[in-house]
Length: 528
Image (cartoon, rainbow, N blue to C red):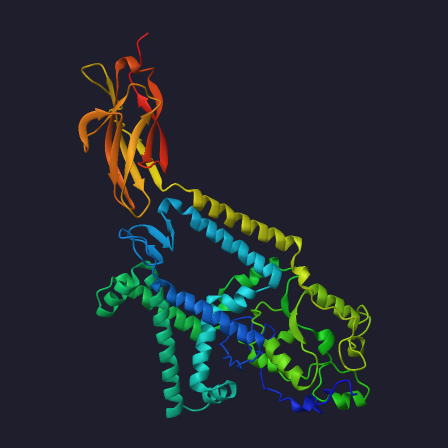
């Protein structure tokens, strides 16, 4: 059996079409100074990674566009939008969770988790975020769907772009860009719905009654979505995004990255039979340029690792399809680790002493031999990854525990500064305080306010009663702060010194929650 002929098919490399594709965005080709962008016309790929990207795009876009319309019943005193950033009332609602401004540390914790999550994913499986879930990638994919639907696949788009301005070209461009703008408007529209009641805001927006900031936000996001996703595309990833330059610090020799296995593919040949007849070594790569044609970044993965590569793996699908046609094993381009690649390169080159020899990695049937090292998923679970995972889980667990145990009642007290105390005609000492009770649940409740560690003291709350007492029941409104003026009076004989510490105690009537504030009672110094 011929080493480079598909078993039982009779097909060889000559049956594979060679695509005229140039890696226009490759660092080897780009000029060091500004140069006009060369358009990239990626060919549609077919395969498991392309299907996975379709799934990710569907899920992420559905989450983005549908989330503002989800409802969540919080009772009659709170909005029923499941996810709402209520800037007017300084609240953030996320289903059953309500975050107040003073609880912003939860948002900070989420940002820290996002950072460690990005480190974790990059260390384990490379730039998976960039290739699958980054908004730039998702919207570019969406825009390419529209472009292919209107103008056709790669060859048709290239022909249309190079051709003169005919009516056919004009209407296709108008339709394409119009749909792009509609997508941009929908993108901006969905964003503003996160900040107000979506149905009401939609009505106000359509009728022209929404706030000017809503129209400005939609206009800005429409422009950025249209420009970044439709016009700039790969330039955003290459020139604007800092992550390609940071990721080098996150990767190690056991990180998964999209790799062209030149230890297997080289030397390339379009005419393997003739080369073999001449006694020349021939690799598995047939130099068809399929990997270049499908690359949305306009690079050639066969040039090695590049910061432009977003590891979308479409080149893997393209190459696997070619390998299937010619009856060779998949994986010429594959997710691989540097350690795996180096081991196989050492095998193919006899530890670097000879040029790549395909015979050293193939058996007599043309398959990869047993000496070739293959990826083992267990390598992902290494100390560095486990540390990132442990930190990520620890932060998440700590936030979850704190969230479950947090009190929804807060008490703040401000002592009067002028005067700090008043001596009444009876000789009793009176101090004034401004009390702020924060009811952080979306329903009204009665809070009991009392004193602790100040024997003999009484309170007066003018807005509730003129009579002094040791405890007052204060009605509070849902999700609001109640501010009261409170006077604390202590008989002269009960004064222990110039400053006496005590506590204000606020508790729910049913005793389910309470809040304590350490305060001080000021009095004139006793004469010696």
